[in-house]
Image 1 (cartoon, helix red, strand yellow):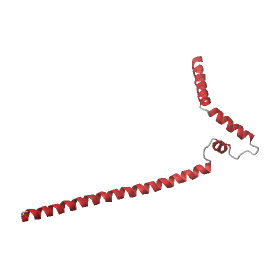
Image 2 (cartoon, one colour):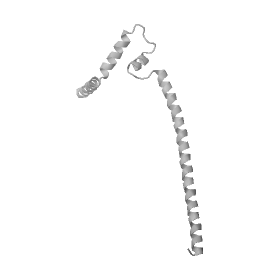
Image 3 (cartoon, one colour):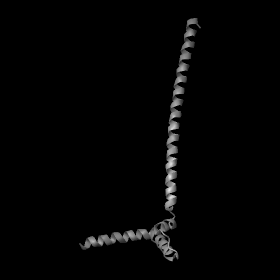
Image 4 (cartoon, helix red, strand yellow):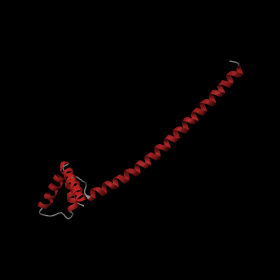
Length: 116
């Protein structure tokens, strides 16, 4: 039982050291101090923290999501158009190859009939 508690404490301490060494504790402390020092507290503490940490606000996030959705639609349309164009190109290549082969057979046939 004591060993399990010691393991948990060791994990907690390792995690705390990880957060400290990666700068997370310092960044969170600065943001929380900044929030504490605000005379007029923001209506959304979470949004304040997100903005201070460099993340988008809720409205910016929604705008980015809408933009992403629009770009995905445009991408899908362009991809379909590209695939259709590739298909048309392949059909043109095939018809051109067939026409060239047909022309060659006709020319070869005429040459052999004439004896040249």
